[in-house]
Amino acid sequence: MYIAGQEEIDAVAKVIREHKLFRYGVGGECDRFEARYAKYLGVKHFALAASGSNALAAAMTSVGLGPGDEVLIPAHTYMATATSVLAVGAIPVIVDIDESITIDPQAVEDAIGPRTRAVVPVHMWGAASDMNAIMEIAERRGLTVIEDACQGVGGGYEGRKFGSIGHVGAFSFNYYKNMTAGEGGGVSVNDDAIAERARCAIDPCHFYWHGRKDDVKPFSANGARASELMGAILNVQLDRLDGMVSKMRAEKMTILKGTKQLDNLGLRQSPMNSSNHDCATQVMYTLPSAEAATEFTKLMPSVICGKTGRHTYTEWDQVLMGIGAAHPAMNPYLMPANAECRKAYSKEMCARSLEILNRTVMVATHPDHSEKEIADIVHNIGVAARVVLGGMPTDQAELRSAKPVDAQKFDLKVDA
Ligand SMILES: Cc1ncc(COP(=O)(O)O)c(C=O)c1O
Image 1: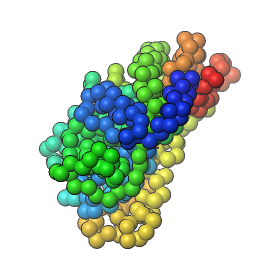
Image 2 (image 1 turned 180 degrees about the vertical axis):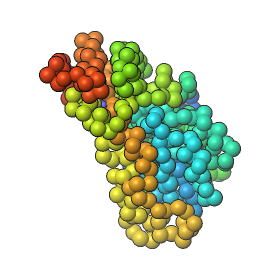
Image 3 (image 1 turned 90 degrees about the vertical axis):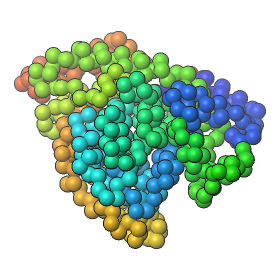
Image 4 (image 1 turned 60 degrees about the horizontal axis):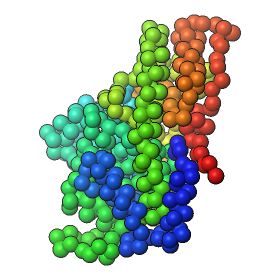
């Protein structure tokens, strides 16, 4: 997302020049990336896939979820968290988030029913879910934890990397992520048998390339194999990751320090579960009301969490409409095995989450921001807060120039 340039071009050119675009038996970039990223995460296995959605569905498959199972997911996440549950024939049960914008452990505990088998903490916008609480509940109540770390590349929780804490993790490397090959994803896991199942879900033919182990039963699945182009780009991107994240963390700290005194007016830093280990792609604030948040974003280029469209359950049409598959016989909502699962959704079902999301704003960081740009951001946050929350007349509001959020965040740099 943030940075892609000459090194990526050279890495891709090398793969093409050498005619080594296929990972198995031909190239070595995917294998190399998988080994390096597993080490980076502190897990035994990492299996590349074509996308984060594929990786999540493979993770669900790998831990044996299927019809008859309910999976708890947060009200605020990208739709793929829900659709990956449906992809394996299970039913997503949507539960509230708290002010950290991640799944509320108490809501998880309260939502557990007789059919609940798993929970998906999502490290939204690179900020950690409350993993200690979730792992404790999961152990006590016998749940499997699938960490959706698709937005958490490079981040962690209390010193451990996202995707290494739950029973299995899933990552995305799409254009908007901290490492990107345009698209891409993968599964992180320690358990050998789960890793083999994840690889089979990603590529049911993968046994043929390395030889099938007698103790692993293959099964049919749809292919989502990574290409060597992806592996080559990600190997370059991995070298940059920590430097980029530490710059964003430094920017976040500067912004928070520079805006701390605005607490008094009602502009509060959103509570974080592991504030020194997040990806720091965003600085999040909770405001007193949705109206104040709306006015704030008119002055300070920033985004309201509840207004991003696809990241809130109210926008997940297929889920709300009960269309869990293209063919009715494959639709988990109609499967007899799911008769006892909870399948009733409404747009009002997580009103507490909506209330929080609509008064939470995100200010984007960027590893290339200069000191001057960061100072301007701090200045503008202060001006916007004083106008919206402190009664400062608008004609006294002197805003400095600031780039539109999207241009800052998603600008692809190519030095060719
Ligand atoms: C939280 C979350 N889960 C899953 C995904 C799916 O990843 P992909 O877009 O690579 O399929 C995304 C992608 O944006 C995401 O943000």
